Length: 90
Length: 435
Image (cartoon, rainbow over all chains, first blue to last red; front, side, top):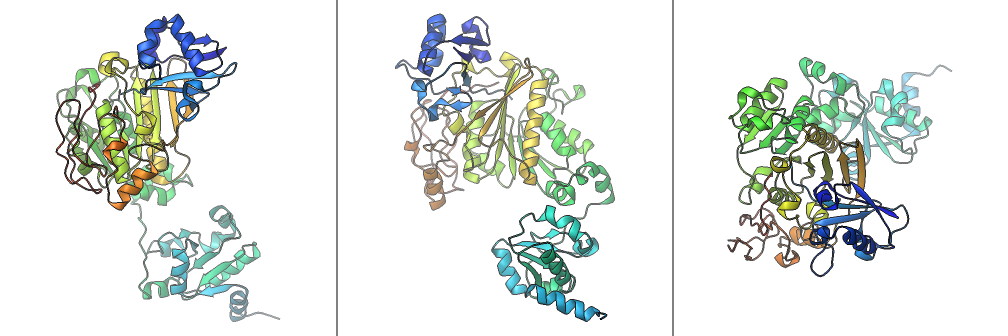
C-alpha cells in the first residue's frame, strides 16, 4: 500500500481525510483506486482524456511525476504520493 | 649572525613571487583571491574591489578560514609592498602554494588608475543597531553594508508582505519597495501586522511606510500604489535585487514571474491556504520558474484565496518570515536557497515537507531556448506557450505577434523583440482567482 496525501482543497471530495492507503503498482493505479472510492474527484484530477490535469502536480517521494513517467510512474509499498495544486493566497 | 630588517625583507622577497599593479589587475580579472593585509583604519580609506581584509597581525589566525584552498594563487597587498611580502612569506610557511605580493602596494595600484572603492563605514548608531548581525562572521560589517545597499521589492503589503517587511526593515535592507493598491481593512488586522487599527481605510503603502520608518529610519520606503499589471510590471521591478511575491492572485504571480525571469531578478515565492503554506525561491535560469512549477493554475474553485477560504493568521506570518530569510541569504550570498525545492508547511501537524522541483526544458519562459532567444534580442515564440498557458504577457522579452485570448481581445503587442521592449499589456486566458 502507498500513502496518498490529499490537499486541503480536495479533502471535501474524500470525506475530509488527509491521506489514504491505496494499493497499486503505478501512480495511475493509485489514481484509479482513489477514483473508485471517491468518484467526485475525477473531474479535478484527470482531463476528459484520462490524463493528469496540468494544474495538479503529483509527487512520488518528493519527485514530480512529470519528470518520471507520469501516470505510469511505478510506486512501491510505503511510497508517499502527494497531490499538490497551486495556491494563490497571500 | 644578527639579521637586519633589510636582510629579512630580502629573504622574504626571495621566497615568494612579486607582481606589479598591472599584473595584479590581470590576476584579479582571472578571479584570483586578493587579501588586504593592512590595518582596519587603512582599509576604511579604500581597498581593491573584491579583496578580503585580513590584517597582517591576524593573518596566521584567520587565513585558513578566509582562504581554505592552499593550492590556488593569492595576491596579497599592503600600502607599499613590504608587509605583503612578509605576509606572503608567512603563507608559504603555512603551505600555501603560490602567495604573491603586489609590489608597490595600494599606493601604486591607485597611482596606476586601477579601480578601488571605499568601504561603507557604519555610523555609531548603526553599529549599535546591527550589532547582533555584526557579530556573525557570515554577515559582519561587509554583509551589513550589503544589506544597507540592497533593494528589495515586496509585491503586496498583506499577510506575507507584512512580517517580511518588518524583519527586512529591522535587518537594515536599505531600500524596500512596496507594491499595493489596496487600503487597510479591519479584516486584514488578524494577520497583516504592518497595519494598525487606527489606520483602517488608509492606503496600505502609506501605513507600511509609517510602520517601517518608525522601526528603522535607515530604510528608504518606495511606496508604489499601483496594481501590478502588464503595462507597468517591467518598470516597477527594474533595479531591484530581489522580489518577494506576496500577492494573492494567479494573474499577478504569472505576470511577475515572466517579467522577473526576463529581467534576471530572483523571486522568493510563497502562498498560503488555511493551515498550509508553500515556499520556494526562483532564481532565473539557475532553477525552475513559476511556470515550470505550475504550467497552469487550477480553476478558481480549487484555489480560493484567503478572503474566501480563510487562513490561520500565523501561517502567512511563518511563511513571510521564511521568505525574508530567503531574501537575506540571496542578498548576502550565503547559505543554500530553496531554488529547486518546494517547502510545504502544515501548521496543524507542525510539519515541513520538501519536494524537488525541476526546470522544465520546454518552459516557454526560462528554457535554454527561451533564454538564448532573449539574449539574441529575439522574443521566444508565443507558440512555445501551450494552449492552456495562463496569463501570457506579450513583451517582457518574449512577446511576439499579437495573440487572441480567451476574453476575445487581441493584444496590441509592440515589436516585442527585445528585453526592455514596450509591454503589450496583460492577458488573462483563464479567470482570475482573486483572494
